[in-house]
Image (cartoon, rainbow, N blue to C red; front, side, top):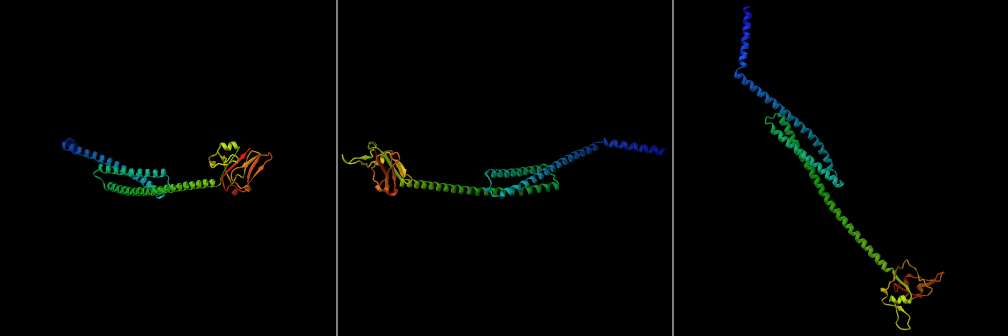
Length: 290
């Protein structure tokens, strides 16, 4: 009975002592410090978890950049002169987009480094690895960009050369056309004849014929070229209808080089029998009809 009373008394004393400790100022101060440390620890843990989450996002983004870089390397490695201007412009736009993404990730990493001064070794390692890879990607993108710029420069030179060649070809074609036209005109002039068929009155009014004396026959005037002659190709026209039953050739042509032939209706036509001989002395044929 005495032992039971002793234990009960001891336990009561302990509870009374504990109650006194909990109510003391020192205990309360220690508890407050522990609570503050716990809050700081929780905050730091949350912050670190957020930082690692951001780093994981950046790492995932880096994979996309690596894949895009491979495609750009292939695209830029192909001959630029095989691409359209639209394709080249799209390639430049893609390179710019990747460059901007890299710079964006660099900025994010700088912010992450500034958020937590007490960085763990693992965190620092991740940061350094990402920074190193970003620099590699930057260098590679710069190489691709330089390669594309050089290809564009070479393409521009080739385009200038092609433009110059096209201009030369155009000039040569124009010169050839001019020469052909000149040759054609010369050929036409060489083989062009002129004829005028009319009554005495018509020929006189046209100042094609004149008289040297009262009883002299009419002759072709020296002003004949000003009259309204019909133009013909002497290689093709071998017969000229005179639409008259009587006709006389006034211009100078050898008699054996032509013939005045009557048709079924009695109307005459002038037939050239010897082209070279007929047109040798003059290319102007004057025929007077009644």
